[in-house]
Each structure stands twice: as C-alpha cells, then as structure tokens.
Image 1 (cartoon, helix red, strand yellow):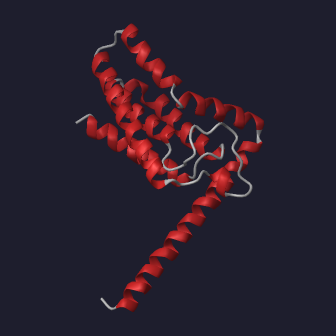
Image 2 (tube, helix red, strand yellow):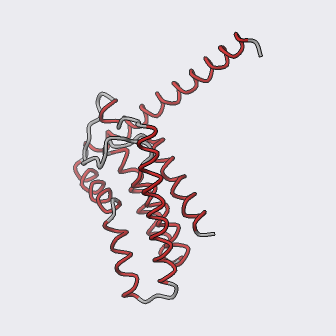
Length: 184
C-alpha cells in the first residue's frame, strides 16, 4: 500500500473514533440530566450501591441457608466469575486509563462516589451481568427481577456521571463473556 493511502486510512479511522467518542459523551450528558430529579437520583444511588457488592454478597451468604437444589454449583460459579471479573476489570482499567465523565465532560458531575479513578469498563455492570447469568442459569425463576436490576445498574452508572455508555456496554459484554466461558 502506498504511504499516502495508509495515512488517509488512518485519518478516516481517527475521524470515526472521534465521532463515536463525541456521541458517547453526548449520550452520557443527556442521560446525566435524569440525576436532577431527586427521586430518580435516590433510587439509582441505592441501585448502584447494591450493585457494588452488597446484593451479590448477600446472595452468596443466603444460598446455603435456602438449600435450593444446585446451590453449591451456583455458589462456586459465582465465586469463580467474581474473581475472574475483578482481575479482568483491574487489568483493563489500569491499561486503558479512561477518565470518568465527571472529570472530562463539562456539565457532568459525580452524583455518587467513584470506587477508582478510571472509567473503562464498568465493573458494576460487569459483575451484575455475570452474576445474573449465573443465578438465572441455576434458578430461571429469578431471571426477570435480576435482569431488571441489571438494567437499573447499567443506567445508574451513566446517570450518576461515573461512566460513559460505552463503558457500560463493554462491562456488560465482558461480564457475559466471562460468565459464559467459565460456565462451559
């Protein structure tokens, strides 16, 4: 390939990237407006806090007490997926080092505490999707409430100014991939 063609192709890729990044920022700012409603803010803060671990820790603790069929397999799957997700999330965040929206975007401010400095990918969504897949696979009757909770966790991370929509999509994809891979 001629050098000028390589430069033109690189320039087109860069233009597509910047258009995508700007769309991501605009959508984050648009969703963040919902944080101005006190009731929405309160619900999404609570959902975000639950998605940070308390709901999943509670599930791990309660499963043995419920003595549902297959609880040991579900518990083991959750522990394996949780450990894999933590390792993957930490590695990606420190490799990509994407600043959070409240740092980079005027008009977006943090409406909840950020656990770390970096945005990509969303660990909350990664865990929520992975645990929902594991639990719903073992107990299908819990699928609908779990997936509603996952949707709220995903929305909360953007509305609260902590993640871009692409961080949430990446977290969901990675969480699903890890859960499906480890459950094979």
